[in-house]
Image (cartoon, rainbow over all chains, first blue to last red; front, side):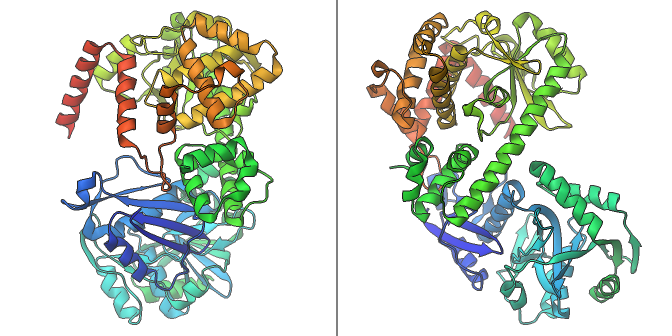
Length: 282
Length: 341
């Protein structure tokens, strides 16, 4: 492909090829502090034009790669960076088989990890990003990787995709952070990528033992309730894209996880109260 | 050498893997993924000294294939239970048959839908039983449905929503509109039991089916995997039975499939070194076009050689339908596409 970018995020290496220069240049900036990767990748992503002339005329970016959704809508070239990020997410969601993959965020302190899962909009990405300002290491904001053989959580510290109001909140809380370009009018509104802090990138190959599993909900008065292992198990099977594909390994890893950790659902009105709830539980 | 040709060379002779550079590996693995041969590659290279990242990737691929095998066998068992009393034993086709019978062609193979062969006079009963056991129609479109029922060699595809698996219920192995007319009755009559209430096509019919599927029923997409199946089947059957080659020739003639089987043998020999008889080894001029198309992927696994591919796409429709019918079919499809878009 014309423009190529290779990067390692935690244990996973990506090779991204693009028909245009701009998305690759944006990737280079955003992933400036990540290890480059030019060897054998785990996943290949391609950003392609639908037809040769569509590189120039009304350019729209089609997301392709090892794993694809056949009828995924293309994005305008101005959102090429978003297309690359979506392409990487897609490879993980459809192709990851080394780790049990949970749609969740995770932070770590003293070698012990907190996993936060919930539907999109529950605020887990924002919360995980903001906890960095309180001494937590960000391990993941989108995909938590659980190693079946050990039960350990492996970091996957991708740039955090923040949306709409969360962008300004995070900018105020993390004034020194590195950011990607602001993309308005994406299918999910305004999106901007926040690069995790130095601790997250330095620890990108350091796994942690999961000790706390949270089901957070943003925008409600502070409250918590315990969650049974059975409920946690079922909710995590729904939050995993590869639980079925892993077969028995997935079942063993997930039962072990929900058995070994403290489990709670928390409601929180702001980051301060969430941090207090987490520190009390942990 | 295109990465697809390198992949073929490594599949045929795993020791060739030692010479690959990291760049070559990236290309070969991407192509293997795209051609659904990565699990097969993983099994072939198991135990060989490989770069750490490659070994880790292939380890994952092998685990995935193993889980896919388990799910495919379970799906076959579900269909067997649903169809008990209607078709016994249940005749499996393609990948599921290979793994159920423990054939080399099944090792590491990726398996999508469950394909079964049902005698035509049991088709209605089989359909009713599957619907009663939770399978549902995938194509609600009346034209598609009517087209399948009148002209195709299989029922419209059914899905089991709970397990998210499709089943293709065949009553023969080529559309009724196609130029070739394989003998469905003989396929069923000579099927061999493989245990557990299951059966598969006879050793010669399996290869005839694979060759027809590859060269008379499609545009060669996914063809590298199908040709690899043929290589493994031919090796295994020829080794077990000294009279295999003449039996295959006779059977191909019975089904009117001499040309496609011969082409399968020549191409398998060219790409994978299949030990076919000497007089079936020499490539023809047209074979080179098939090879060109089978190997048309670049180092990013993109489909290359667009013109060759287009040619094979047109050919695939040409073989399956008489011209007037093809025109009518494409016209209806085009109008539907235009009104949907």
